[in-house]
Amino acid sequence: MSFGSTLKVLDPDEGRTVSGFDNLEVALKYVFFKSDLHETILALGLSWDVGGTGRAKVGAESFDTVTPQLFFGKGMGDLPDAVRYLKPFAVTGVVGLAVPTREHNTHYVLDDDGNVEIEREPNPNVLQWGLTLQYSLQYLQSYVQDIGLPRPFSRMIPIVEFAMETPTQGREAGRTTGTINPGIIWFGRYFQLGVEAVIPVNERSGKNVGVIGQLHFYLDDIWPKIFTWTPFHGVLGPTQPQ
Image (tube, rainbow, N blue to C red; front, side, top):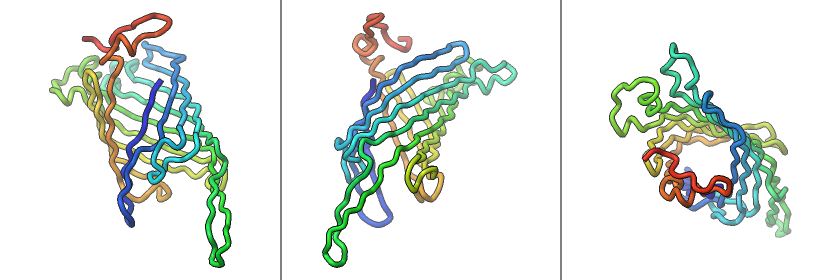
């Protein structure tokens, strides 16, 4: 179970810079298949975007959106030794359908004669899909060949993310928007830092390159007796070696 939100800073070509948090996202995820031998994992998820909890000026909607999801991950450690330098590669991805709880947004505007007109903006279902391609330098050092990388480089993961959205209804149906985000992640004992460029894939997605920063805390390693407890097995303990 997870809780999250995104701090957005919008700097348009015309107008003032606006910042604020997007809506709160509550998510559940369940791993239903895992193979250590083939470094493969599959999971089902359900995400709830809680409407009205973010700032409207940065695009936070006033209605809820529910998204069932399928997650997958595949490491390349089962490749033959002849291509051992490909073993640190991994691919992860997600496919989900975002279903808004409101079909239309209603706006009231005045025409030139002072009459009130009603405009209805549709909220279509949106297919959300994405991939990441990453290369773990720690995996390279520990399981393939020690090439002598010092810290902090030995704990870095170069990564490229592809984040796409395709509406399935209305006038924009089938017209994909999204970004390609190359960057790098550094992970430590209790937290992870990341920074990526945000590059639009087409004109509908935007014209300028942005930047995204990430900070993740590993609560199951900071407080293992609390965050690794399960009703089936009790306290599992830290997820990483001491």
